Image (cartoon, rainbow, N blue to C red; front, side):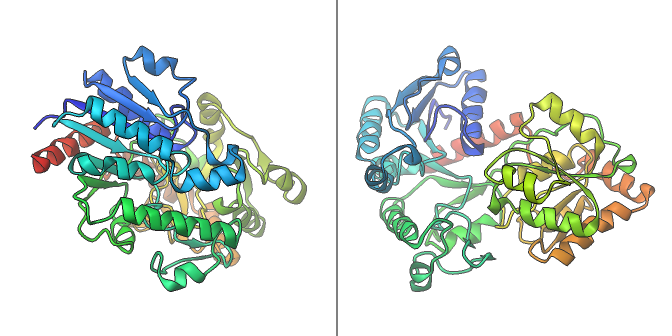
Length: 411
């Protein structure tokens, strides 16, 4: 059975992060193929002229991100956004057909768990994309920010609920626990949901810890394009690059300390709350700030390696694959879901980024590696013989195939 319309459900109509960028990319890919698309978004869609120009039907809730609301209002609407629920219920009544797919992308910053209550009547045709791990873990990353260690607790188990693991406060953790409980009631295994789309196979076991044992999980790896279409000649280079937000949980402080110990030149591309601190405490680190793609391509021509040092276990790690496809070796935490594949394919090194000595040793290994050896890594990475991601068109194909299978099962 072929999908005749897809309703994309997302917090935002304008890309503010990876999940929204992918949601909007899917809308464009579907419109290119002539498939009718409705975008149900939590914001006011005030900057969506380009989407309207593509013939995308936009249904905005008119809300604001939780961080832009007053505290009490944010607490209430973040737990259960009644306005979003009512708007989605009305949309389903007006537009639903037996061949309409509902694809949920991001929901935690405006829409809230209430949308899953609205979707229950059409559950067999609902696909929820797990771009992160908020479907299972209250803080979304299975990481104890207070102790700086990965978390293996059962979500909403006694140990989980009594442990202060949130990056903000224990009160905020309590609010997240309440939201998770509401999510379990509205999006639980008691309803026949179409599928959960995961971005890496290792996510399945993590999500099952919250009780999705009967849910159908389908791996759809993210679409990735290389930083550059020409192989970076890393054998001639010496600089190590970090690309991303300058925030504590991205591990950039741990990287700077390891770079000091290894005596390598670190270059950061990105901005964030740590930018000013770096200028004071790590003056040897060259900060380039945010760059457009042409500037990024130019800077990376001097890269020896790209480092993705996230403190928590990244379920995907787009930067690592963008670098790999450009022929740049990567250094990745041993907790990252991609770590085993990266090392097995000879595309880079994984290490314990919490251990400064071990981290510095990984940097030193690539710094001192003979030119012929690191060139071989670069050429293997650039050849991309075993892709760790999809290209855009293949990603669109994979989504449409998923829609077809979900509709067949629903019928």
